[in-house]
Image 1 (spheres, helix red, strand yellow):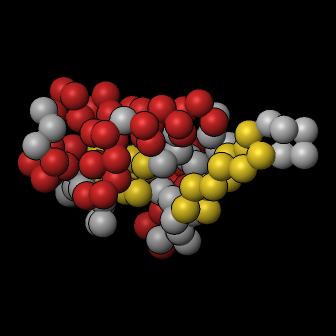
Image 2: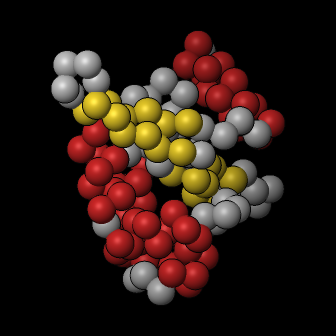
Amino acid sequence: MVRDLADDAPELQDVLAALDDPACRRIIMELNDPQTARELAEETDIPLSTLYRKLDLLTAASLVRELTEIREDGHHTSRYRLAVESVNISLTDDCEFDVTIERPPRTTDERLERLWSEVRKET
């Protein structure tokens, strides 16, 4: 499932759980460019079934974004992209933890994908 992160405010516990997981951190370190799950599995030496679970953790925490790559042959694939530039965890005036995520600017393809998603909702 492709998630739109524009309005997502991740839960603190989701972010902490993902960042506490060594395999998730390894995936984050390898996501310099968008990659398929199979490419990530090869780069990280994480079994594919485990990698999908870790990608679910990372997407729930809004740290990784799943993109759909449209192919002419009709066999579309998912690519995963790092969705953050920084993660900040701070203490509010009420002594509660707050998580803030700074995101990189959207690519042209991502803006087009979001526009297309909005059009489909309207029809």
